[in-house]
Length: 100
Length: 449
Image (cartoon, rainbow over all chains, first blue to last red):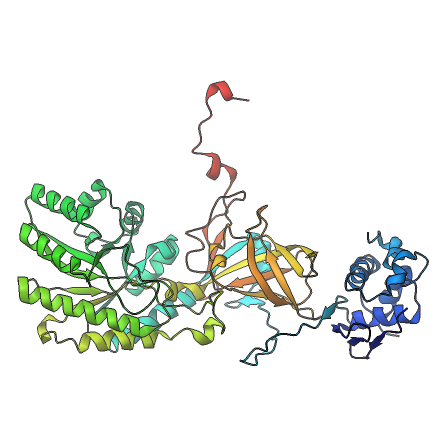
């Protein structure tokens, strides 16, 4: 579901479908890369705390907001919006307190 | 594996639009200390929000301004514009430096007298001076600047009743080539009204003209406008000398010089775009020196500089209350200081600097104050790094008008502190308590709870 996205290691993102470009912070790049690898949203916070100096509650809060932003920017495949089982769907991020 | 330093996960969509022709890229700035004092320690001691004033900057600005004018012209007198900031501590600093007081109401007059300023060192301006205030001002010999004919007639009557000749000045307005043209204060010069008023007060026999005052605008970015004003005032003074024999002792060019603040409408930052004080001094003094006054009748040049002396010396310390993402994707911050204490946010693009920049991507951010009012916007857009609730910010320059125009609207007003030249920190206005707001009220017994 992320085939249309090209993400460089230094945080430059190109959406081949819309032509839009984005900049991501190091942690933003990390999270999007995890999503593109198929990591389930509910596992993102733990991955973030493994890699960065942040505690789990703060990581969970920031992941929730980041996922909402990714969704809001329409970077996800539209079909995934109605698919709660899709790991890329923010709706699947209920462990963080829900995004809807 | 060791963990890397953390910054908030951020994603920013690239916007295309007109390039900034100045080529100014985003710059990361933070401000950990004010005059060497840690901002976080100030918040711990005095709370947030907090007005902070720098004594060093106040004195430095005054001395720069005085030097700029006194090097070019032999007789210069500054008067501190009370309405710009009438904290006693601020006024005293300027008075210690040699400034007189410029007041625009009877309460400001009383403030100056309480601070030990004699009447003859008070310039009394403004469109409304109640009769008791005029009586006091006449009795104490203050410099009365007449604004309109009714005031002229009243002062003339009071002089007649007192059986003496009272020195007065008149305020004039004129075209100096700038817009808006301020013509609501004083007598118009260009249509002859000012000279008529002077002839009238001379003919009455109870008033004598000692000064001519003008104040052409506010945040005037064109120093030459002051040059034109000074030239016209000088010409009027010389005309009065020829026609009536009255020698004008001083010309008061008022205030309105731009500070380093930035208007919302300005493209470049005020620090780059505002003229230095020397440019104003050069324009004004050149006009006076070239006007043709006899050597022994050179008038004193009076100045009522306010904003340009104090704006840079004032800071607002505030804290982040919350983060938001607006429906259109814009990042927003809520801080604990709003337009209730930052009135000038309506006109100026203040610097907003984090006290601590933990890194992360800069993002255009709208800064909202704490009021439950849609107009409470401190900055519609400013580049800031990710910030957490509780993080401190410094907003500058806010020394001019924000404290005197602050409101007890919804929230009480915060404390103001002064950092001395040796980094001593003094509270110069305590934070308000509920009784400061509710004390003057009276509740009828039938409505008592």
